[in-house]
Length: 244
Picture 1 (spheres, helix red, strand yellow):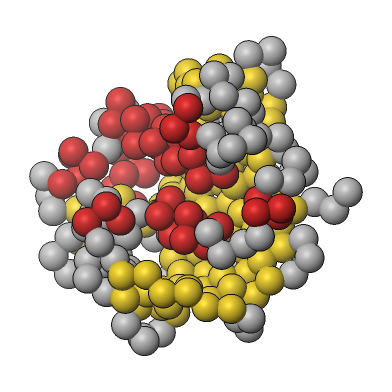
Picture 2 (cartoon, one colour; picture 1 turned 30 degrees about the vertical axis):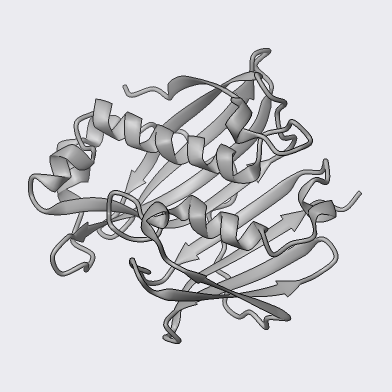
């Protein structure tokens, strides 16, 4: 029977802000890097999919962080797949410190696309061929929540450049999150309170597009929507800090 896979990490200086604690985007990046490493090791990473002109893309993500770890802190990310569907696969994560205390968790849902048509393909074959990779452990928190409507109170623009693009030639997840976080008051970003991020991808944004990022700001939360070149919404997200 498959078991949860665990990978060691350390909070490096480039991953902290001026409080010397890991940023939300660096922890999210570590989570997504773990997904890639684990899929590669189990034989269904992007290297295998690319041979058939396919790739994994993140559809939805929920990330909860109870306390951002300090610089040079060692921690472990555990990951496991809890289900395969025809369209989406659910991969889960826990973040634990050196003493074994859980300080974060994530649930991600992934789709497979054809790199030529950029459309989703049936991933049932992955479930059939790699059923042994499924671990009978439920997700560690609620699955990603959909943000259905945003009424922005402020806007920003960003032109998609080389450094924004990932191996799928669209905007990297963490770059979206960094664009959103940069719109928030620094006092909100540096609060030492549990935080939850939900992000939902509706369509791709590509190199050269001009993105419009809208933010609906509340006292302890913010909602975001991103669109490219004045088209329909491509990404929606929500960030909420627990009230003291």
